[in-house]
Image (cartoon, rainbow, N blue to C red; front, side, top):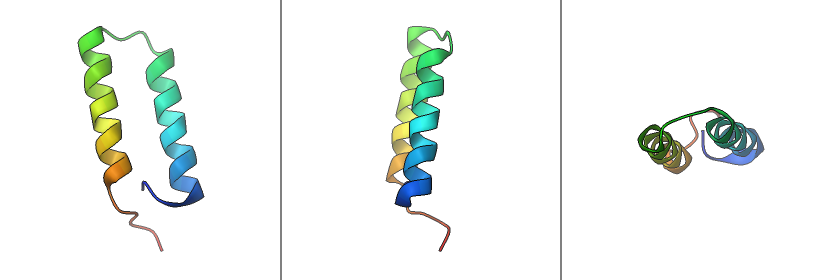
Length: 46
């Protein structure tokens, strides 16, 4: 998921949504932490 152009665009979209949504500081921190984990995962598509 975190590799290639499609994965990069998807990660950017998630990051943008996290910024746009009204979250508590704790929820935002957790969402950003999970997004970071997703970025580190190898891509499952070939």
